[in-house]
Length: 316
Image (cartoon, rainbow, N blue to C red; front, side, top):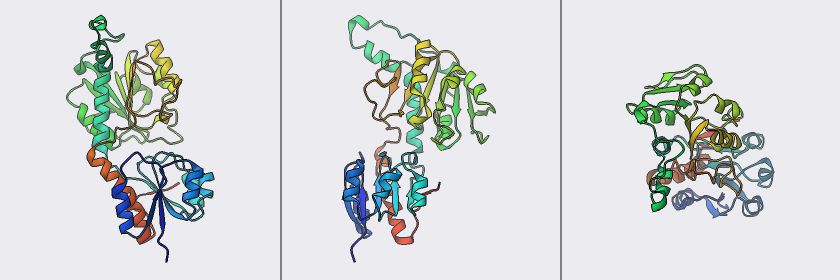
């Protein structure tokens, strides 16, 4: 009997440990190295499993993969996969558990400190005698006098609150569920949180209800001269609205690990601004988490082969 075929789309990780695990479990493995639907349809015509990064898996692609039974993500988020279409076609979708909570929270806190201390500005100004004494539009403020607002109360939010604890004047949190964070004062109204925070850090999943959460109204409710931090999903933020808030001085700066368009294309409203600190969707990254992500992604597929069900399913 022919071994089942598993196909890797484009991933910027070393998938060798995942490939080895899949082959040991009895799979044939092909690395397509592309998110192009035509490439995936060609190499994956017989594939029962598709292992993906951040490329789109929509209904049109799914219809071109008639043998497909599992889509396995290398992230916890799944907004790049049409989960409803998968369900309709009898395809299981697997994502990852919280494997990089520490990394993401630490990255968010590092972005917060870098933004508050205007490190990107001073890095640039220190490289030339003519700008050595330059000062930014918003001079750094004392950390111990700042108030932090956390949108979301999940694991990364909890760790972020712990990192900030003892260093800032106050920590508040808000979530739709009403759940509170240890070490943070719960706030019942989002706009109340925004109006009382010098830093707002986003820790919520991207869903239809949170798409474009940070819009003109959200930003207008923030304190003048405050900072926005996002290590969640780029789609949470309306980039054009943020650019307007930066221009007006409503925001002192923004620190983002994610964008609504990745990688940013020419003309993106935030990508070339000096008051925006960007990292390339690497908040999750460490030596330990990189290996864990690859292995767990493959493990979901192996679990399906051995038991008929993935370990960490996504449901519509």
